[in-house]
Image (spheres, rainbow, N blue to C red):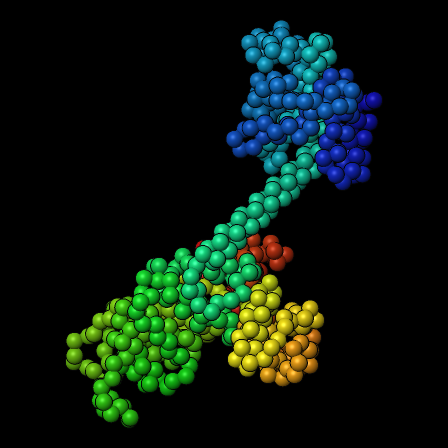
Length: 513
């Protein structure tokens, strides 16, 4: 078979054979046949120069057992270093190689070796030898190996890259599985974890993991999530597992009070400070001294309140509303705040102070919406069913598979709170012992595509922007803020993605871990 015919056959095999594990032995057999070699190998090396045999074949078209003991590493090392093919007519008669232990041990005579190079860097070799006949190979043999290497290098490199990715994916899944196992063990051993139920999904196990890491610290925590996801329960769990657990936990809804009342509740006030202030009052900073203050809906507070809160967090000092000349007061409190998923959008619109955001976000916990944690729905449903069956004194069996399917199909724009209310509604309307579909609220029975969501009431442009922001936020959270990786997943140019993120007011650094 001519050299060109060999190259043609190899090229044809590259096109026809999609399984690279089957392709390499086939290629090596053709090279051995053409060169009259007795053995042939395709060898790659990692960064540590450790040799890995992708294929190792005998003249009889069979695999070589333990090929690592059947090659001259001296020859391979020389080709790796020079980046050029090497043809040795008689290794035993060549002073450069005769001293090699491997050459002597194997009894090599004819050897030929050519590099595998990609982007100017060597990553392996094609190696053939004939231990029983000297002068078997010549310069044409070296050129053939070189040309074969150039022909297969792209496919080989891609196969190795794919294998690496698969190994990384498997390792990642193994690590995730181990993490989930450890977290579930921790959860089972943990006492008094509040009313946080439905910790089966990886997303909620990660929430639990962050809670357990952050709780013993004094760091401020920002809890981000949609309405009804259970942000307050997360805050209470943080307090309950902290060193402040024996002290007060107080919640202040920043969206429920007027500005002056909000400041009064938090900092206290003097008699006569404003209409209705008929006596001096201590605020939460004083009454919760040594404990935890939970600022819910912090993003809905006024700019003035945000400024005042930032000053207090920076200085550690505060005054009651109406106090001017008094010595500033001090209190030892830990701040936990909660906000909706549009907080970064508000920052981009200058509706929430960036400095306050970073002051509150020493630790950030994202509570996923229920539609992203289907694994938790069954446990949550059973929990709420038992709660309201006991409250309304009704005897109810477990939910049917039909009801479970309806619950899984629903989009849950109101999240866990909506699920709870749906189960309470069903228990109230139940006549027998088995909950039927008609016992559920009407909107739960509708397909997910027909559920009422806030964005459906938006103009098209706003709805599109909302979807884009949600999509890119998920990507950045998945890639830990690495724009290049997010662009790869989105099949976008990196610069175009960066422009899009700026237009949406999304800062990739906020997602870095």
